[in-house]
Length: 132
Image 1: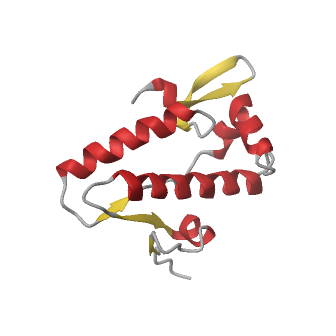
Image 2: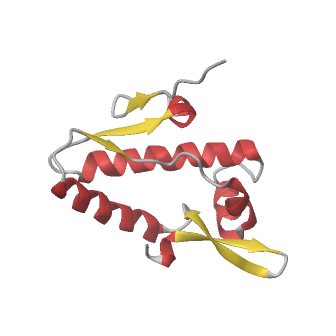
């Protein structure tokens, strides 16, 4: 994957690796637009899993660029703020898929991320079964 779209994870000694997609960079969404269009051209399925769940919040919280981006949206750097950022990303991913996948696909998201999006008309929800 193009490193320019990944989040640099920071530790006490500087960058310690890469993590999830970086929502603070416009190049991330440009990359996804191209990726979604290419994948849609290869497969005929009517649904398209856009992902966006199970993000490593620790990496996002360590990255000054992502922290500043979340702050600019009013979400902050707490776990709750990162969950808001995760939901924002899933919504953007779904919108990119819906607008670029030809023929049109129904974007999907999973579980809590999808619930936070309120299961918009453009996205289907798949809930994971969890035993109590």
